[in-house]
Length: 92
Image (cartoon, rainbow, N blue to C red; front, side, top):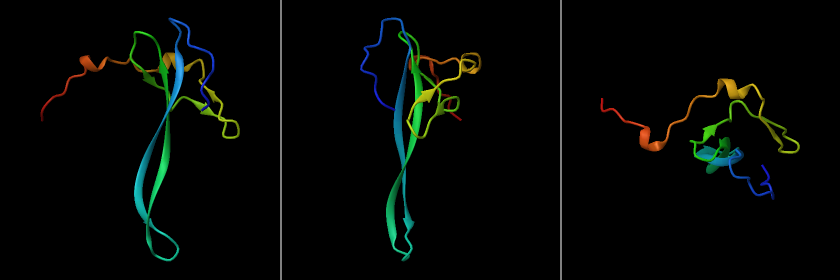
């Protein structure tokens, strides 16, 4: 996803992309082991003063242009985010 040259306006949400990689080794056609990584793009909505919310499952990406479209109805189905300080871990 290309970065916008327009500075974000205060109080406005923005869309950001993060690419993570999953790596492992696999055999090539000769049976030799080779290390290979696969990209995993993730898309987030970031609003000032609120936790970022991942939109990857709701986003539609044009594979030819890389343009990302977030359907308007996704606002109704997104989970509420929590600040990291509010996340608790329970011991099992």
